[in-house]
Image (cartoon, rainbow, N blue to C red; front, side, top):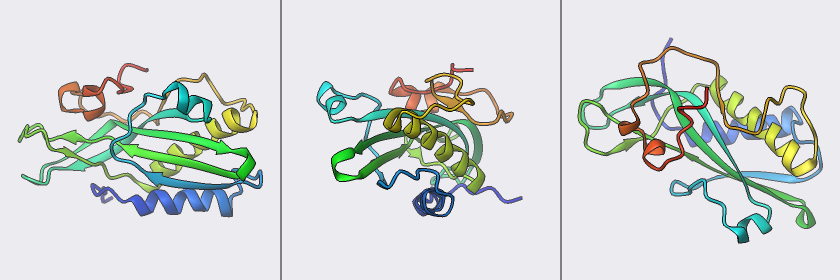
Length: 179
């Protein structure tokens, strides 16, 4: 089984569209879009909150490859940050996503590599996000919803998480301790 180590935004865009269009996961008549912002944080200002912005931090399984030495490594602690809001008057919803990187243990050059994900992992992350959107934008409650914290995907054994190599940990937003 090959492991993708390349960051592929189109995989996220296509899966998001499939879930919305083919599977009708958000069937409320609003037009939702997914965009990327590689510098956003988990902080929501009072002004942004008034405009309806919410944040969801997801912890996923991904794979990395160092651009310098080509070393590859898996991680079950890849942080994906989503900001989302519904503009009711306009019938439009926006999701802005940021994947966080990890730096190579061998090179330790502070160059954060972006993660690669399997289609299944992308689907799980987006379904969890959609569940948050249903709850927080449409008032729908899901019986499977455990609490409002971030979620880690299915447990997969990897080496212990190294906070010093994790971009999200360095910014204080890693979900490493949320088991």
